[in-house]
Structures are given as C-alpha cells and as structure tokens.
Length: 548
Image (cartoon, rainbow, N blue to C red; front, top):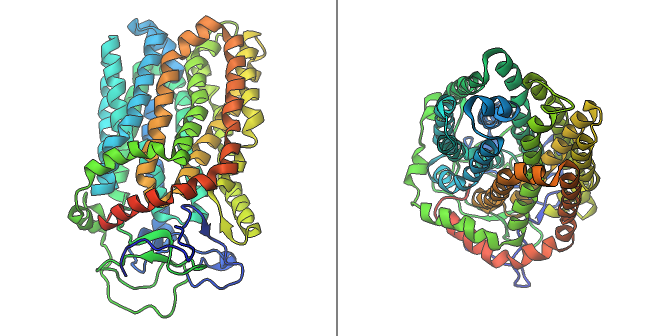
C-alpha cells in the first residue's frame, strides 16, 4: 500500500488529532485494548513486530519509563539545585543576585534553543546516544561550576548546561509517545511532568542541607555524582525507542474505519504483540529475530543509520510550525505557566531568606517540600484522573476524541494561579506567617504541573505524527518566555515592590490561563484548516522513515 494521503468521500482531509478511540458499537476492525478496556481502539495502531515499542511487554515498557525518569531527575536536579543557595553563592563569589538569576535565564534560553540541535539528532540517529551524551556533559559542567568566579564564566557555564541539558525539555515527551497508546499517554506525560517539576523542587530541599553542612560548592559536586550514577544506569538499561512506523495517523482507508493508511516496511514481522493488545487471527505468521541484550546496548541502531539524512529539514520545520496556531498556543500556555515557577524560584531565597523570616539555607530548601506535594496533586489530576475524564467525554461524543477535551482540566488554574501568587507576594509584603508563604509555593507548583502536562498533551494529541518536531517549537516559545522573566524577575520585584508586582502577576496569570477557552471553542476548526499542511509534512517524514 502506498503512502499517499487519502481523503474522505467529501474530499476533505481528516482533521488532525480527531480520532475514533472508543468502539461503542463493536464495529471497528482495528486492534483494541484488552480486559476492562476492550472497547478502546489502540491509537496509534501497533505493528506486529515484537520490537515495536508499542508491543513491548509491561516490564520492558516500565524499564524504559524508569530510564526516562532517571534522566529527567538527574538533569532536572542539576538545573535547579542552586535556587535555595543563591544568597551564599552571591556572598562567596561577589556575583549579585541579578547576575545569578540572569545566568539561569540564559540557561533556560539554551534549554530551549538547544532542542533545535539535539531533537533532530535524536530522531535521525537515535534517542539513546543523545540521552547519554546529555547526562555525561551535564556531569562535567557541574564539576566546573564551583570554579566560576566572574559573571562571564557564570553565564558561559549556564549556557552550556542549558545546551547539553536541552533533551530534558522536548525528547522525554516523545519517548513516552513511542511506547504508550493515546489512551495511556496522559498518565505517563503526567509522570514526566511530576519528575520534571518534582526534580526542580526536590533539588533545593537537599541543596539547603548540603550547603549548610558542606558548603554551596558541594551542592554542585553532588549533582555531578548523581549524573554519573544516572549515566551508568542509562548505559546498561536504556533501550532505543526509535521505530520507523509506516502508519499515518488519522488518514483512514475507508470512512468510519479506524484503520489508518499505512506504509508497510519491508522487514515488518507479523508476530503476537504485547499481552495488552488483541491481535487479529488472520495475521500471517513469519519468523523474526528479537533483539538481544547486547543489541539493545548499541549506541546506534542499523535502521537509524540507513535513514536518509533529514537534519536540515528537522532544524527548520520547528520554526515553520510557529505558524500552526495550536502549536504556538501550546508553547505560549506552557511558557506562561512556567513563568510563575521562575518567579517563585527567583524570589524564594529573597523572601524566605530575608526579614522577617530570615530562613537559613537549609530551611529555604526544606520549604520546597510544599511544591512537591503540589506537583504530585497536579500530576494525579492531569494524568490518572484526566485520562478518565477525557475518555468519558469521548464516549459522550460517539467515541470520537478531540484534543481540546483535555484543556477543560485548566479550569482549577483560573482560581489557583491568582490565589497562589497573591498569597506568596502580597502575603510576604505584609509579613504573614511563614506557613502562608510555604502553602502558596505548593499552589503555584500545582498550577505549573497543570501547565506542563496539559500544554504538552494538547500539542501531541493534535499533531501526533509531527510531535517530535512540534515539541521543539513548543519549547522554543516556552523557554524564550522563561529567559525573559528570569532575566528581569529581580529588578521587577525590587522596583515595583512585592505587593504591586504580585497583584499584577495574579491578574496576568488569570488572563493567560483563560485563553484555553479560545481553543476549546475554535481549536478544532484551526486544526481542520491546518490539515493540508499537516499532511504534506507527515508525507515527507514518512517517506524518509522518520515517522515514529
């Protein structure tokens, strides 16, 4: 079967992201989940190859997810451990808080723009080598960091840390989509959000105690040690998840069928799939060679090496994707939610370490336990609960799932963002009890987690077959916004004062999150209008073996 894009009978292309995920009448011939979810259609449709990541056993998927989690924790901790010790660093090096926060702003900028380098390499040649290089380089940068004594050295260190750590921003989400189906994806992207945001909040907890007992330099040395441990774990247990998939999601061979148009690779092997997948009895039986453990340890897979080189296209397309309104919105939503995380981190040491609280470094770090609770609650809401809400809405819509359904989970943020910011900034300005400030940290962290998971899921659900490159676009928007706020947070709060700055922040945050309703109302129409361009780019990737 060729890979030409088919249309429906009315001549219209299928709407990207709209999928028939619940087989209410039992009439869809595609593969289904098993057990209590037998009416769930598997999207994307797995091949019959046992080494297709969608067909991996639950244990193999769990190990892959654990590796992604270890990478996220180690690199995330290294990026955030200094937040509770900014004052000691400033006192010891002579660098001002503005200099230190500006450096972290440049780091976030590099975290975003570095994706333009690492993401194409990962999609072209494999995710495993990119993860290994990233965590190893982060280890070396952490060893160097304590020896930076000038503003130039500090900024250079942070830029390099952001560049080499960039895969944490856009690659982990794609690793999730490589091995999980759409009805499972929300839970595991929420797990990624938990680990990403959680690493940023757990790091200052132990950093405060380390700084108090061993000095701030050892905060960075311990980050290097954690990265070294993570590198060893990934080297022996992380498996490549790239898989050249011939299926073009949503381009259906017949109206009303969930069987997508596919390009069958020459080497596809028809064998029993994962225990979680029902397989049609009519599939022909052929022999296959499963990967050995040593095959899995290879830095590069033969299939990735043989693919046509498309690096130039993969570097330029994320910039073109800024013209897709849904992708641009996902980046804006992610970035505008992360802004308040940066504001919190940039002012935590200033507020809790200063009068009237006068917290020592270890106490500032310990206060980050509150955000950890908030992150956990946010992950449960957007993941386990969110997946069930979205499936329920799909059942009510005749089995059809729209990506916009997940945006309704932003409703709590309409109240929680202004509440958390006012309690944090205005409360501190009026010297409320320290528990109020610590509670506000948890609320802000909860909304940050909602922003991560829902923005990422909306982008991926809308344009699954372009998600590897679309996520780069999202991160470019997000981290450019983070850079701007990281660079300006200290003078902004200093010049406006805590009360005025955070009243402004509260209403700006509420207005920002309210924009989700625009896409609830008009998102599907925008996706429909983008269908011809989406199909063009998907065809190009499919013909190059880059459709994962």
